[in-house]
View 1: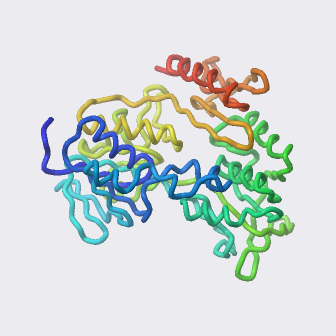
View 2 (view 1 turned 90 degrees about the vertical axis):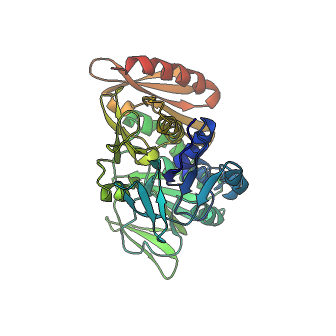
Length: 394
């Protein structure tokens, strides 16, 4: 393989960026690799934060993908607590915030996403936290003591996982969601209702169509004020209001950004030297006949590998069937495909578990959701992923 003087630079040392660095070595890249990340900790796996770390079964440090020594051993220059100030596409260089100027052979933008802020009075009080980093997870875990009153704002996947962990820790839990259903962007209402029912059966107070007006407390949060005038006493507030893709660096460089950094089916942007992957990547899907952006663990893994191979000239079209899962209490939610594209959902019972088949107006299967034990649903979901590869292809 040709050895290039200029390295491959990866902006974003999150899940997809770290995995892409590893994939470059796996697939034979012998040149330099520079991985730039804004956080000060080693790249880490995020899903355990809302489960194992909150339950005290794992530390944030144990969520790291690789030890610090692994990067040196594999010739990867890991630059932590640093950001890229701008991209100079014409000279093929990136400029770090500290002024360092780095040339690149290929550039991978894995800048990920940022949480949507909680924009109400009192959001800056102590005890009001999102769940995004190991530091957040540790702070929340320390507060999940038996008898504590926990209010979760946002009934997305993360919010419900936090609620489950808090209840398992003996807390009194209330979930507030302004939308009419939970996980509205991910699953049909019949699926979200089934998941919410599991929470309610265990004692979680889940409310929909609720507007939070303000948070109250001296230094630390003590109450949540609703728009209706009702006041909920609390000891901690955790919010999960979705995320937005980090596109500012790409946009400033003149790259197309529309619901993420726009990329073709090879995850290449309009600049042939620049690629994108992970949460920030909005790619052309031949399977669905549209541009789509996915925010899940499996997509971060798969796109990292595909982007690495394509930066090495393999021309691999990325068009995987979407797949994500969530573990809550003693059950799992697994989703294959894009059930949101369906207009009708039918239920199939398998043992103590349920499968939800979502089809479009033509009767074509668009996605399958499953709720139950992993033992009962893993096999069927795997089979339906294979089926979806055929039925949703154009």
